[in-house]
Amino acid sequence: MEETILKILKEERGADWRDETRKSIKTKERTQMSRVKMPEADPERRSHSYEEVNQGLTEEQALAEARRCIDCPEPTCVSGCPVGIHIPKFIKHIERGEFLDAAVALKETNTLPAVCGRVCPQELQCEANCFYTIKLKKPAVAIGYLERFAADYERNSGKTAIPEITAKRSEKIAVIGSGPAGLACAADLVKEGYDVTVFEALHELGGVLKYGIPNFRLPNEIVETEIRNLEKMGIKFKTNFIFGRTVTFDDMRKEGYKAFFVGSGAGLPNFMNIPGENFNGIYSCNEYLTRVNLMSAAHEDFDTPVRFGKNIAVIGGGNTAMDAVRTARRLGAERSMIIYRRSEDQMPARVEEIKHAKEEGVEFMLLTSPLEYFADENGFVKQMKLQKMELGEPDASGRRRPQPIEGSEYMVDTDMVIVSVGVSPNPLIPAVLPDLEATKWGTIVVDKETMQSSIEDVFAGGDIVRGGATVILAMGDGRAAAAGIHKYIQEKVAAN
Image (cartoon, rainbow, N blue to C red; front, side, top):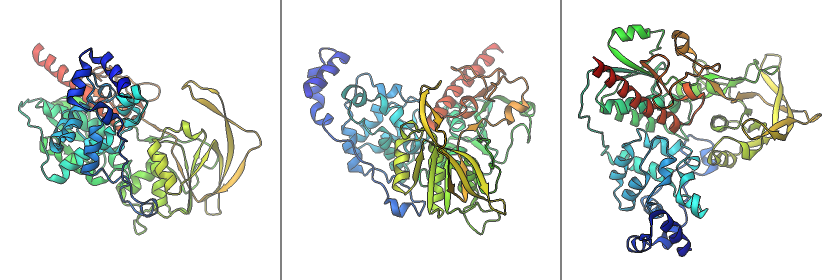
């Protein structure tokens, strides 16, 4: 094993790698260490509470996992990170026991490390590009676990590092939306010295981080702490502010705003348009999660509580579907079902989320699609007709297309349905800017490098551009837009 590893590394770094390796690290010992296992809350206990499922690494576990990193000369893990975290740098700080320094290294490029360490799909990004994954075909270094550890250690220490803002510029920038794209954009701009204000339409900050992700996966206190840190950097926040309705873009330009970043997300739910979809007790996933996570509608004494179903069905196979079905389980559902028309290996949800759902008693009805809903005498859903599917030829995405099996229909009792089959971009901003170029799907067209739209002082990123993105991809867009805005303003200043 050692000779194989040294051969690979010699090809990458050169003839001196063998001696350098033997002097600095024990390669064989590192690569034979097992990947750390994340401690988890007991499935039975957590399925009845909002206790965070992943419990975080101990210092001993973090130190051991950090030792697995062999400090590649050309770290491919970094190229897999949409915000460009220097991963070996922060991991080596952990290995040396310099936990606060690790958090500082993370924050050089990542505004929300405690968030990303919890919800980013590292297995598809940085960890997919790890030396262990690519060259050794072994489990990657647990980069996400270590990121969370460093961020949590800093927060719990009470010694939070706030970047010093040395420059001070007069230009005012408006960031529309306080989700991950907007927060990342605002952080990079304030570091450049700009006067940045984030405008949020809802009454609480955080966007999808708050309304879309339950506490058992991302506790609200984590998001709130990260936002408080941004406030300490000098970012201003305004809630209950609907851009294009509260004020217009022209109004804001008259107030001195020199550029705008649109990170208004994709909050418009999609439905399947099948018979009975308008019956009572059928929710969009967005409505259900927003009302539970942000509006306290999970309490029966709330003015307009959500329905507390006993037999609930969630239609879809993404992370939001897992969030919804696991939330319903915590609110008392006796039978929790995922209805998904493809196979499990085609599910877009993270493997970890699927595993947690199964542990909590969620039933997976795969290769199955709803055809129709039926209601009781009061108009509330009581049953659904399902149809079995089989996989046919690949579709445009390369996945085998599900096809209905004739004569396979059957009925299932359900008193609540949550539809999680995708979302569309928020239409408000394109509606109030007729000169803004948008696609037929309602996404804003931007230059992929600068994130600049067809209106020169308007930039955009995240779901409003992509139609649907992970937290870290949205943050990458926000950082790219911040660089684009800085370049645009400096060119304007130079021209004048």
